Image (cartoon, rainbow, N blue to C red):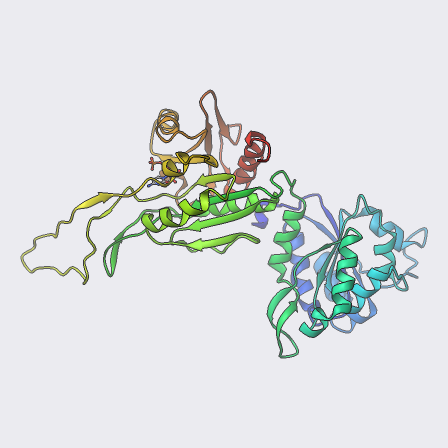
Length: 409
Ligand code: C5P
């Protein structure tokens, strides 16, 4: 993920207030810098009780600021200068007390002073709460958080689960990987804000007997990348996934299925509630006509078993022929003659857009090359005909989709 350097050129001021979650902020600095960002750490006195500026300096490669009286700045105004250089201020962890201070506009130490003094248009404030569940659910905290949001701040999380105090509930700081993913998404253009997308991904598995089945090499990576790219752009995403070993992208609602029939039964009732349907799944064309109740055994006569196949329903064609279909995007995984096959599929399935790719070159891989085919045009992605990682391609595909979508219904 970080190899793509999604935060290249971004300068992040990372503020730490006091909380045990400070130890996670050390890892967060590493992830941010690996993703290409420069990170300037600012710590409150309470944060220094949990983790040292030495650690944070070593990881960020920059001297840490802890005081509004720090004379290192030529004009002696770190609270002004730091916020003017930043693309965002991220306060992680944000304690209940620090959130209360921000909500009131108080400024009696460097971090809160800097947050108040930041140029609000150019430097968004992102707050990542971390506290005990009672503190989080307290009406005072909820009031303060609501105030921060109405003042224009963004809030990431909190997560839910085990807490350092031994209790279980809401208030945990998000994991560093989650904060990174949310921050990367934060900077993506919100071209699909509020749009509802339904996506299928992965292979299907068609059982022959209780231990065997027919499947294919699809890893689901392309479909999951599309789900992530759509969610990053503000879409509400439902992802119907065949058997894959991938974690669910942030903010995506995932439904797991096994067979083509299950995928069909899941997708069809959902399709009408979505504005876009993207069929990335490599659905098995056929399934065994009958499912053997027990494992098929060798018969000792070296005679291979034979079984009949029956055709699976075509999910994409079924969705495209609904009375009011969503905007449908199909995929074509071919081994040759990509353009001809994609064009044929466009007509056969009656969809406005087919994305062609070469099956053997994409299945299981992190990189891919796409050919966007509609009735008139064919456009390679990347434009220079080389290959790119699937998330980069998915983001370009979502930008293209946003241009093609009809105005909101
Ligand atoms: O029919 P074919 O497999 O060539 O077409 C591929 C496209 O159709 C993909 O978008 C795939 O997700 C979709 N498809 C489907 N249901 C099937 C077979 C394919 O939705 N049973």
